[in-house]
Length: 390
Ligand SMILES: Nc1ncnc2c1ncn2[C@@H]1O[C@H](COP(=O)(O)OP(=O)(O)O)[C@@H](O)[C@H]1O
Ligand SMILES: [Mg+2]
Image (tube, rainbow, N blue to C red; front, side):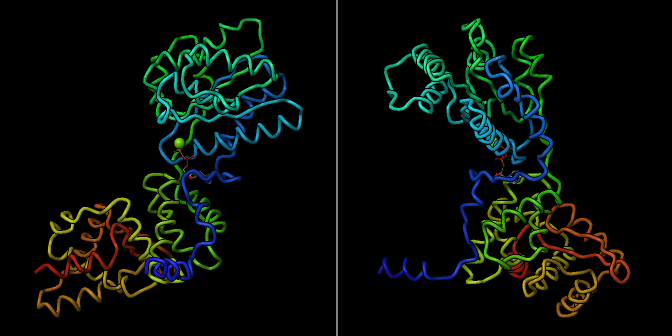
């Protein structure tokens, strides 16, 4: 039984070519719209290649969730590793997420384990781990570029301080073998640390702004080429995803929407990812609060119902005001309700847009047309909520 169910499911076609490309920990080779940050990092850390061991370099990457900080650090670090190798320099990149390893002990143990094979998991003190690491670096003439990601989660401030300064002091006159990238969502932590370190870090801040919808479009367009079969998704639908995610400027959100929408397409047996799949995906990630819909005025609900019933049938991302009005008038006639005037309807549309359940855009084709898209909730679900009401 189970065997057959699984086999049958596996035989179904899928919109994905390689879905792992859409997972959060996949690091793409090319990070579009982060060229400036990569250039900045290179300027700061080129000293590790030009004169290895000369100084302990430190930099800090700042920005909100999903703006590419982790991806840029990883891609930068591993690429520097490769370039160093070409120049016969032993450089190793180590990436530590302080959300997972929150204490000095855990961090130092992680570093030791990623460098030295067969290191014991227990029984060593921080100092012993540190000595092991240091000796290993000296013996192998090795340098480390260390990223402490989500550094705000380190519980002991001491640990951070240690990394930032004392690594230096303990080994005066020796080569500086560890350079550091810190990643944080805000700069608060800077104000808690030592003045001298603070000032170097303040000069080495690399900022990551939220992505615009155009940038998000470029990012998911590139990824979708690797992840999806050809022709599975239209540019309009990719744009819809980019616009939804642009409210947060968050590439992780955009990629998650794309992946989930693909899963819904597969579940539907559809060979294309359609706008309704995106809406379903969106309401999985951030469900639109149903009570807000229920508290709308009667005519706002009727307008929404019109939009939902058009988009449920359509495979396009959007409808337009003319279409919506004519369906609205029909529904009013059926329900024997006096329809509202055009100008009033515009106000309702504005309000629906403000609460985030629809998106509108004015386009210039033959004259100006307002196109309307439903984004907060799947059309089907909205229709069922609204039609179950009196
Ligand atoms: N410029 C970009 N090009 C391609 N993918 C990107 C880009 N920026 C972010 N991503 C992807 O978006 C997701 C979130 O990025 P991440 O680096 O984890 O963000 P952060 O660390 O700032 O929260 C990851 O899957 C990452 O690969
Ligand atoms: Mg991150």
